[in-house]
Length: 433
Image 1 (cartoon, rainbow, N blue to C red):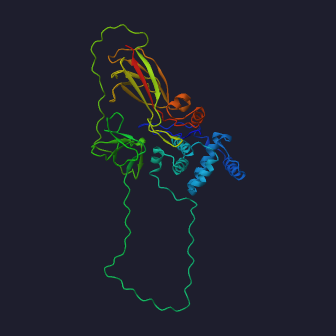
Image 2: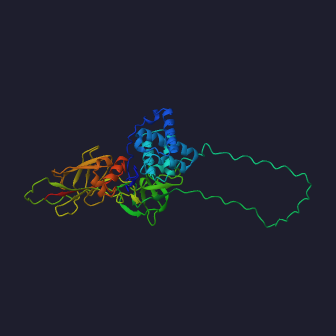
Image 3: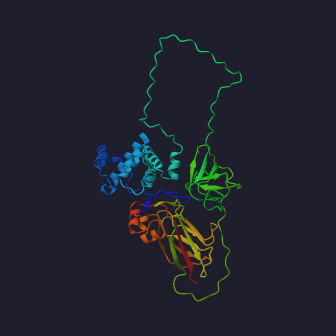
C-alpha cells in the first residue's frame, strides 16, 4: 500500500517561508461561473452513476476549482461528512494536508480573505495541522452558517374553557437564594507544542538553548517580540524562555499580548582567537576542504511524525554546515559561503554550536568554504542539491530519509509536492591536511 502524504508548507523551522503554488494568483479568479457549476455537476453525476470522479481525470485547475467549491459549501453548512464525500471522489492521497498546502499558498499569494478562510476552515475541519493557518484564523470570530434554519415559533396553546381551582401556594424558604449561572472564565493566551520544540534565551535562533518543550505541553504566553513571531512563555524555573511561533500552536486571544520590555540583547558574534603560526607540511592532493557528506534530515529529525501510513511534515527548513579537521574534530572560525540568493558568509561556531554554520534554507542553496581559521583563502569542494522542493530530491534519497518506501510511493509523494518547503539538510566538509 503506498503512503499517504501531507504536502505541508511551513513551520519549519523557526523562521520558514511558505512554498509556491503551481496555480497562479489570477488563474482561479477568471474561471467562469458556468465552468465551476459544470465541474460540480460532473461530481454529482459521477456519484449517481457509481463512477467516482478521480484526480487523474481532472486538470490541476479543475481539481482546485472543485476543492474551493467544497470549501465554500463547508463554510455554509459545516457538514464534514459531505465535504469528505465530495473530496473522496478526487482520490487525493491525503486530502487534509493537500488543502493545507492550497490554503497556505493562497495566503502567500494574497488571494481574497474569504477564499483563504474557506480553504483554511475546511483544512481545519478535516484535521489538517498548520500553525500558520491557526494563527490566521485565531483572531477571526467564526460566523454562523448562512443557511442555519431559524426554529419556528411555538404554536400558542389555547386557554382551557373549564374554570380551574387556583393552585395552592407553595411556601418559599426565606433562606433560599436564586441560582446564578457561573461566569465562564476568560481564555488566556497560550501555546501548545505539536512536537518537541527548542526554548531559547531570547527571540531568535542565535540565542542559546535553555530547554525543550515536549509535544502536547501547554504553557501560558507572557510576552512577544516586536515582530510577533516569537513568544515569551512562563517556563518552569526560567526567567527567560522564548519559543518560535512557527513550531507551536497558539490558543486564546493574542491581541492583548504586549511586547516584552526586558528582551535581552543578542549574544556577541563569536570571534575565534588567532591560531599559532602553522608548521609547514607537505600539502596533500585535492582541495583544502573536501566534501564528505550531503544528507537530508529524516521525517522525525525535522520535527515531523508518522500517523499510520501517513507522513506528517515537520516545520523546519535549516541548512547546517559541519566543518571538521583531518581527525574529525569540529573546527571553529572557518568561513562558509552560500552561493545562491544573498550569498551569506557564516563562520563556524558563531552561533554556539562547535564546528557548525547554520543557514536558513529557502528554496535551495549551494555552499563552499572560502577561508580557514587563520583567514587564509582556501580551495574547497562545492556542495549542491540541498533543496526544499521534493522534485529536486532523488528517490533513493527520499527513501533513505523515510519520506516514502519505494518508487511508486515516492513518485506519488513527489507529484503531490510532499513536504514542499519543509526539508532540512546537513553538509560536512573535512580539512584535507
